[in-house]
Every structure is written in structure tokens, then in C-alpha cells.
Amino acid sequence: MSRALIVIDVQESFRVRAEGPEGWERIGNPKIAEPVNRLVRFAREQGDTVVWVLHSEPGTGTEFDPALGHVRLLEELEQPLPGEVIVHKTSHNAFTTTSLQQQLTERGVTELVLCGIRTEQCVETTTRVGSDFGYRCTFVTDATTTNPIGSLSVAAIVERTEAVLRDRFADIATVDEVVAGAAR
Image (cartoon, rainbow, N blue to C red; front, side):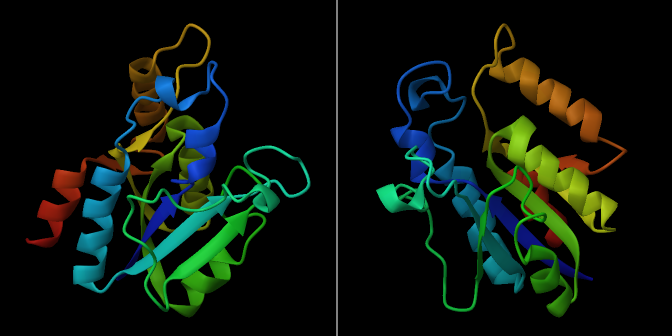
């Protein structure tokens, strides 16, 4: 079985977003790069495919408009190595508007490990679509983050996301569990 780590939207766009309900100061884990970096290093050690996904909204004038320069990985992240896949998406999931499925198929990938920003949005949606495409998915909760939504806290959103994905679309794991699982 061939595995790919999918790093979704861990990008500067979120950090530069204006203050408010979706501002960086309210994100659940502003140090999201740390658990993601652990997964990246582990994936590389295992010879897994590493895929970097960036959300882009060309022509909008927002922090997701590539013309403004914020559609780039957080600077504290491990940066892509030559040959690693980088895709730019314009939809919530990383498949619909990219060549991701083709890239994974060409590499013989059958299993996805998913992490990134917006636990309940882009990471969850990519997990669901990946599962529908037949990939075995592992959702690494502590390597995702999000903001509160209305009266829902980050903890409530994470709990809900795990509940709807578990046993339907994905295995739920922590970074420690993913790293320990390969040692068996």
C-alpha cells in the first residue's frame, strides 16, 4: 500500500486575515506548523508522497488572491522538496479543481493521511471526497486547526468533525498514533 500525506491550506492567508471571527488570534492552534512538520518529517522518512495544497481565490483581492502574495505555506513549515506535489485549489476540497487524484493515481497511492487548516471545512471535505474515491483515509485531528463558528467552540467543531468522519470516511488519529503505527 502506498501512502500520501496531504497538507491542506497551512498558509499565510489565514495568518494575515483581518481581525474578527476568523482571525488568526482566534484560531484553535496558532502553532499548527509543529504537528504538521512532525507528519511531514515522518512521511519523508517512510518514503511516502507529500502533497502540499494551497487555497487560492484569484481576482478577489482577498488574502487568498495569489496576486497579493499570501497564498504560500507558513514560513515555519518544512518547505516542499523537489518532486513533492504542490496543488492550488479553488474549491473547498483538494480534488475537484486540481490534478490531485491524477497525481495520486500515478504514484500508486491508496492511503491518505490528512491534516491542515479548517478542520471542519477543507480538511474534512477533502477526507470525505478521498474516501468516496476509494482511498483509505486517516484524519489527524491534532494536526488540524480551525476557528470558532458562531456559538460553536473549536473543541465542539473538532468533536463534531471526528464524530461524522469516524467509521464512515476515515480513521481518526493523533500525530503520535500515526508515527507509532508505522513502527509496528
